[in-house]
Image (cartoon, rainbow, N blue to C red; front, side):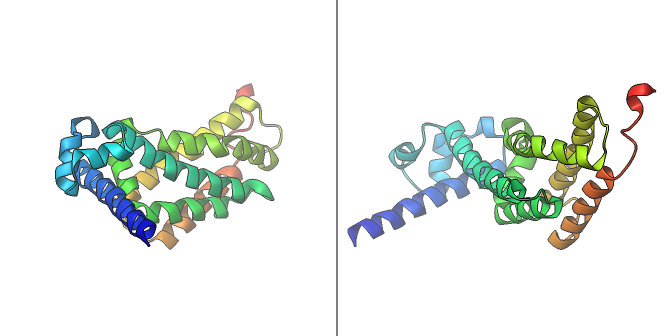
Length: 196
C-alpha cells in the first residue's frame, strides 16, 4: 500500500513539473526558464525537481524523448507489413492531439527541439522506398528532393494546426494530409528533371 501511494505521489510530482514547464513556455522561451520558476509554478521544492531531472534542459529532453519514442514506434508499426500513408498520418495526428501541450511547446520553440527531425529520419528510408515504387526510374537525389518537399509541407501544416492558425478538425487534417502526400507521390513533377 505504501508503494502505491509513493507511485501516486511520484506521478503527481512529475505531472506538476511537466505542466509547470508547459505553462511557463507560454510566457517565455525555454532558455529563460529556471528550476526555481518551475518549482514555484509546480508548488514543489527544488529537491523534488532534482530527484528526477538535472536541469530544465534535461526535463525538456526527457519529455521530448518519451514522445518521440512513441511516435517512432507507431511509425515503425505502420511500416512493418505494408507502408501506409493513411496509418502514419493517423498515428501522428493522434499523438499530436493527445500531447497538445507538448506539440504547442514545439511550435513555439522550434529551435530548441529535435522532435520533427527525429521523426522524419525514422520513416525517411521507408518513404523513399515507397516513392520509388510510385515513381519508377527516379534517381536517389530526386527521391530525396521529393521526400523533402512532402515532409516540408506536412510539417508546416502540422505546426499551423497545433497553434490553431488552421481551424480544421483532426478528421479533416487526416484527409487533407493523406490526399496531399498521395497526390505528391502520384505526380510526374520529379521525373525528367535530371535531364533538363
